[in-house]
Image 1: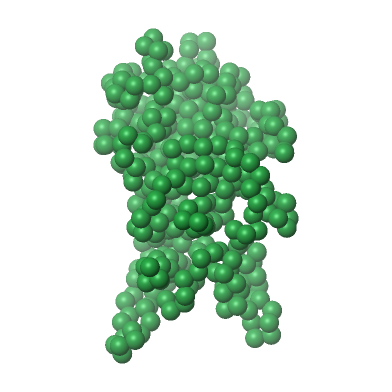
Image 2 (image 1 turned 120 degrees about the vertical axis):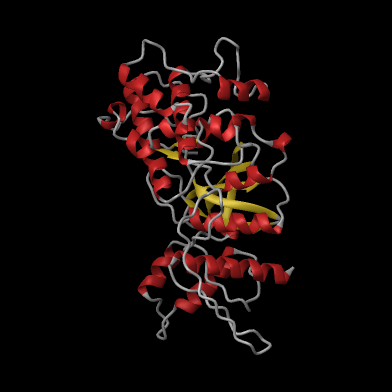
Amino acid sequence: MAKDVRIYLRDVREAQAKARGISYVKKKPKHGSTAASPVAPPPVVTAETAGTMSGAAGEVDDDDEPSSSVGELRQRQRKVATSAGGIPAPAAAARAAQQPPTHAELERVRCVGSGAGGTVWMVRHRGTGQLYALKVLKGNHNYDVRRQIAREIAILRTADHPAVVRCHGMYEHGGELQILLEYMDGGSLNGHHIATEPLLADVARQVLSGIAYLHRRHIVHCGIKPSNLLIDSARHVKIAEFGVGHILKQTMEPSNSSVGTIAYMSPEQINTNLSDGSYAGDVWSFGLSILELYLGRFPFGENENLSKQGDLANLMCAICFSDPPEPPRTASPEFRGFISCCLKKNPAKRLTAAQLLQHPFVASTQPQPQLLAAPPLP
């Protein structure tokens, strides 16, 4: 078991080296021969392929004993980075300031949600009172899945954008995988009805800016839907549940897959056995989500009483073979055109997230101070 953990930690260090564009040279084996193998940095990293870009996980020696907590790893980082005079170098101090709290420094406040992927808790830092969201992943994940998730977390910790929920790190505690995230006190947009176009355009603009940022970093979300769009008390809308959710979907049995997620998949994603994501697939899911917020209901199957939680076969047939849903004729031409650009059946004809940000529906939008009413902090 200890050997497997050392291999896992070594893989994380290799990912770090690749992300920084440097070669990774293995240590001299104990039997005397020297093995050195330069590794070129990977050209792209996507959330689907669990790329090896890093920059957030600690540097760990192959011969170190495996760490069971972020705290132990952080202590070793600080020891190595400290100068001869006992004062951390500026770069090391800055990196230490970005380290997540240890698991022991967190206390659970209450459960704020649960789903196919796991349970989310509001947690509080014992020393500062800072609130976080702690997602406890369901299932007993094997070594390969844990390693892939660790690599994804290393990628996601480097994501820094106002419209993307911040990922602070990962713990393995009591046999569970737990992910520490930014806490959004307003909850999700699932079930909201935003019929006022300026307010909806503000939501669309914020979400699009986050999607465009992820796509620039070669990260495909693969799960845009209202329940993954969160809001805080400052009326900021942010994207959650990217990266790790895609890995978990790949490891689930079909019977455990979320019908609610399939409902927002694009036609080409369904026709490729639900395993391939693409930038255009994110745009489809985004457009469907925005239309749902406008209508106050799931856009497909109005006449057939089709629900996003209904029969899976009928739902998939509707997505693949029926015409894309449209806003009512009472909507503005700008909004109708905007949704049409998102919901083209042919993915090659959909606009990109960056192009949609230039669409008249959102291009002239100003931030709306009264976007949505968020509940008070506990």
